[in-house]
Image 1 (cartoon, rainbow, N blue to C red):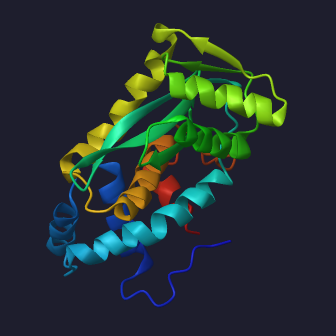
Image 2: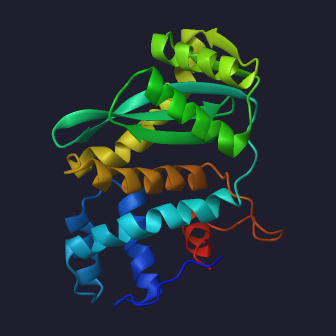
Image 3: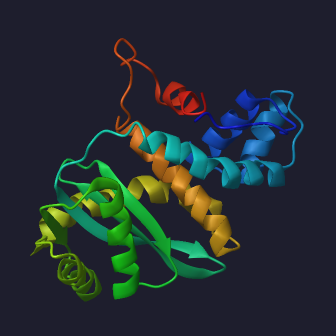
Length: 227
């Protein structure tokens, strides 16, 4: 289903350009505001924020329908995002090749949060054969609990160096979020995180493209999601 821009006060291409700039590069909403104004588009930074909040989840959902399959060996970890002056937790997982599996921003870092993330990832990608963690007791408990509740046999590996791939992968997200200087509310952080992860996945070439269109740039792939 195509994303609807009905009722928007700006053209679709302007909206998507502003959203992409904010999600793909280390910028604030005011930075995007200034760039658009230089191109003859007078706009308020609060409008750009509303675009990001509204369209990021829709674009990510459209991407998911075209996402390449991931491997059955996962690496699971969490990083930190500042919200209202406090650190919140972005659970993330990649496969053994570094392809993003899924992500979830949570207020807590505990077994319940890890289990919610695990269920979300499995709902989208099915049950993995094994998950490597860094020794987190909460993550281990969540995987064991999932196995018990669903009769699965996900193997747990606690090997620090094998988890380096997901820890290194956090840097791509942190590079974009750091200049944002934190979010003012949990709800205002969720959708931008979804969009930032979307841009990371597009950059990793995780999107299935039509034959003959393999040379499409990341920007072109992003814009095609709204078609």
